[in-house]
Length: 327
Image (cartoon, rainbow, N blue to C red; front, side, top):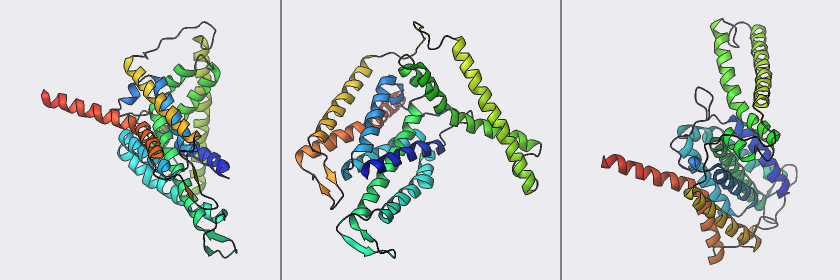
């Protein structure tokens, strides 16, 4: 049941992250004063691989709370008011829906609160599990929002272009498609509005026709853009054996220390989970490991892992302000 729920939430996260508006007027993802994004792409990708995997696997309440707080903090740091607006408009309702749906269909647990009209019991354990599932869903979507802002298409191609060139190109085009499509459809809609042929002009039938026209334009644009991109990459010899490529990314000492930090934290947390330091169950009764020394050490390392980009950025902001005040 937990595995199916986790897969369902992952699919929802991948779909919902497309709604998130982190775009400038040119349709390019915006990153504000983020020092962590300047690290090597391998460091960025390993960090998100760890936090996303741990967020979807660990169901201990402390781990869920740490993941949620750190994901929201990093999301707000990257996107400011847009992240706050997105959390209030989408995350909060989604959390409530996830928390309410689970008790309606899941009746496991021994602590019965009341009986529904259908005769099924409403249990305390199902309510707690619904809240935990909602927290996990919100944290995963927030991490994907940060991932979408940091792991750009050029970083993705740099990491996987030689291993799987065709797959990396397709994934890169997919990641870029939604932002570019939103920017292009806005431009087309504004152009149609200038000639009185947008979806807000005319009768209902005329609005429908205008909407179909805009959709037809966008479909044509998308197909032509895909063909042009494929021809462009083919003419450049993309994917050919022995082909070299220019890269602006260099792995320096800072990246080495960051990579070692991520590997040590990830290994310690994974071993702690294997040894039962993060054990928690919701059925038939909610319970698991408490705030004992060893689990607390895992929680602290997990928090250090999740909050590391925000800590790096705040430290760099402090240094920058100190330099400005000194001059």
